[in-house]
Image 1 (cartoon, rainbow, N blue to C red):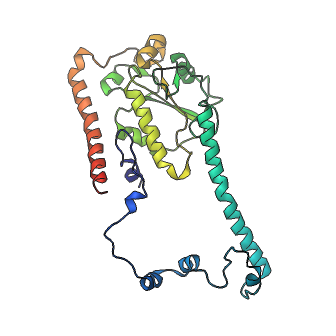
Image 2 (cartoon, one colour; image 1 turned 90 degrees about the vertical axis):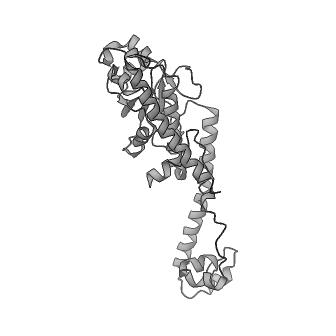
Image 3 (cartoon, rainbow, N blue to C red; image 1 turned 60 degrees about the vertical axis):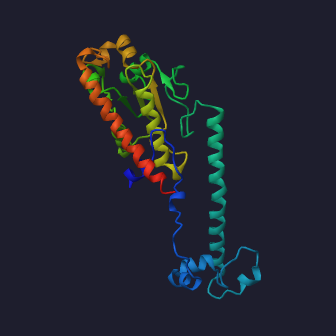
Length: 291
């Protein structure tokens, strides 16, 4: 089910409403008698209330003559109905409050439950929260263990770059399909995710936005909940981190994407990345043609 829900959008993350996909224009009209014959008793009662159902129109005399319900049972049912009704506007109010909070103050994480944990700086991507190499070094060294439960460092460079030197504890994820595996993993409260590539100007930011989009899609029924509401981009990428914190790199080296010894590797991984993206676009196009 997860893969089906995750792989129905393209890289631009345009989403066609799930409600539209349930429309059918070639179905045969159903007669009222046929419809009644396949309805369960519960559905019939909800759509066509019997005389002993409370219509909600204040017909107290009608309710008093219901022989099948005791006064305590009727009171309990009314309290349950009022409870259900009172919850609906409360949910809507909470969502509106969260949206307003996020619009007015971008210091809240993406689900609006609390403020960002790490200090941020103005980076190249104004829509993302950026942290410095020193802040990430402090995270790796455990200086934030009292306020975060866990952290992930996602290195979006190609494998030959990663093997030539990476931040201690980082995971190499350069394909969209690999990034999606994060959404299948158990999550923890106060867990943070930090993305980067060589300079954190293209591959890292794109992967962060992709994960956020799919996370929103996965949790659309529980907005604004997210698996990963607190994510950052490493300002300056691996190059900046290596220059400032080489002792936290393994091995202690830096292999650029355009390294002369890896031109074939570069072409291979670029093609591999684009082939997955092209497949996603074809699937989206086929889906769009059905409407």
